Amino acid sequence: MADNNDFKSHTVDEDIDAISTHASRQRKDSGLWSRQRYPGALLFNIFTFILPALYNTLSKLWIAGIDNKMVVTTDTYTYISVVTEVINEGLPRASFVIIGDRSSRSIASRISLSNTLIIAQACLGGIMSVVIAAAAKSFAGTFVPIEVREESVTYVRISAFSSLFGAVEVAVGAATRALDRPDVPLLISSVKTALNIILDVLLISKFRVGHLDVDVNTQAIIHLSCDAAGALAGVLFFAYLSNILSSSRPSGEEVESRRPSRVALWTLVRQGRYTFIESAIRNVLYLWLVSGIVKMGSDYTTAWGVFNTIRWGLIMVPVQALEATALTFVGHAWGFWRFRVGIDNRTPKASWRDLLMITRPALTSTVIGLAVEIPICITFSVWGARPFAYWLSESDSVADITAYMWKTIDWCYIFYAISTQLAAILVATRPRWYLAQSLCSNIFWVLPWAIAVTRIKNFNKDTAWKWHSIVFGGSLVVSFVIIVVVLAAWSYRLTRGLSRLSRLSSTTFYH
Image (cartoon, rainbow, N blue to C red):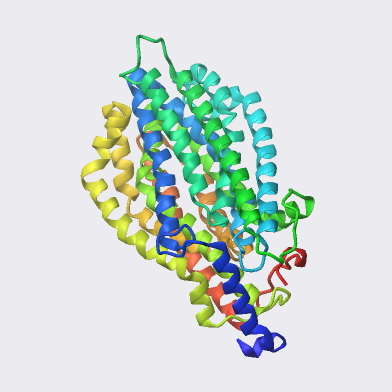
């Protein structure tokens, strides 16, 4: 490292000492299962993701008990979440490379960035909620089969405001993970899931109290109320946590404002614009494909919803938890390296040892993900897909279609498990590169196939999955290949000092 950092060579040891001192005062508990260590954070994240996945599974079961034709209506909540994901994967995902920089940024500046993020997301989520509610009929017309479309409009209007609370929840969760407090998103998940399950059991399940006249809209009201309670609990806990973190500031450190600011917003936007554009393109293409799936009829659409519950539910909890943990610690490592080579050095040169230090959390997540997902996919494909699908839908035809879907492309999700962890390296270091690899996958694979399926003759519910499996399964394999190539280029440029890194605001740094 000395060859490209001669101007810093006389202070490198001092910098490392400063980083070590800063890190030690950030974590009182340095044990293996501490929130500030990879194993401890992973454990928190597993529980955080498994609780909503459990509820989403149970809610479909309860709706099927009321009217199995209305199971497909509950999928509109998922599609609203997909629309909201555009804003939830913008600024929040930028938090890992910015707020996660615990080596350079002071705790006050990180809290200021977090407060700015939460307020910005609340505003964007509120706007999104109003727009979706106003366009409820059009939304239902696009994403709900004609058999239950009229009955679903009210459900969409109610669920639209989940965008607001979801945006706040994601912002608080991302910010606090970057601050090494994964217990905050766990609290949010625990509060809303516990309330959801309790109220659903009492009011809409087969074991409900009395003989209440309930429908799918009852579940929407309960879900929305619990989302609001979870988001509020997260905001209040974060406010309490902010005071604790600020009061632990070491003596002699200057008092900085923790208030949100335009400077903090611009700092987030500079990196968040890349993840926002990536998410917008990816999710627009996904919703375009889903609108075509809805035209295939109620059984096919319901099967697709159940398939999503399986793949993005309990089966993918380990992948989601590993990704969140990798993002946090790759962000920390990237901040450490940038501090060491000099925050004003726009073209630093990294050694292979540096790259290993930066990528180790993601590589660890990759190994664990493979060890977990391969047995799960095989076991579920051989024994569990159809019974689980029938349990959720109480329909033989839906269960048969879902089982066929899963067995066709289950192996593709092994590639997804790997590429998700590897992509975390780009998200937490160079979001611009993350956008580039996603554009390659979506523009050169998903988009051409999305256009092609609209022009295929005799495209119906009996032949649709042949083409949809190529689009969805193929995109997972193609994304894996692209992310490997892009990471190789990312590594090469860093080791040659060819990458021009973003300028960081010096007012937020330790000196």
